[in-house]
Image 1 (cartoon, one colour):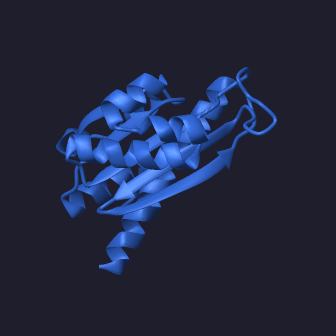
Image 2 (tube, rainbow, N blue to C red):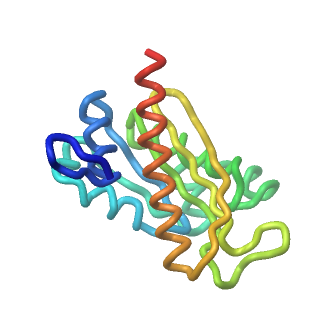
Length: 169
């Protein structure tokens, strides 16, 4: 949080402010966070000006049906992959007609992990005005902690991407 005119702003409030300044709408596509990301964004006062819809796509079928993630991507790389996060975030932006989007896909644990894809592995996709970024994170902790850290990281990535794309223009 930072201080501006003696008021502290949360991460979601800062993101909402940047979205409003740019005149952008935002959408979310969530797997492992299951709506937690949307809920956190909705904590920001006035978010209804920029947040129109979100997608909880826990199953592969939902990722394909609602976001247009290709069956081949899911078969080749798996639901928990950089490629899937990219297709999720781009599909969400396209479906919602939004200029910004966030996507999360991962293994919150404690079960479901493998040596190659351990519990705590999360991919976050961010799309802002035609720019797509995907990050890999490996979080430690209980299921709720992994989900919470994924949300925090997604909001941080959105804020950073909005700030960097604003500088590039």
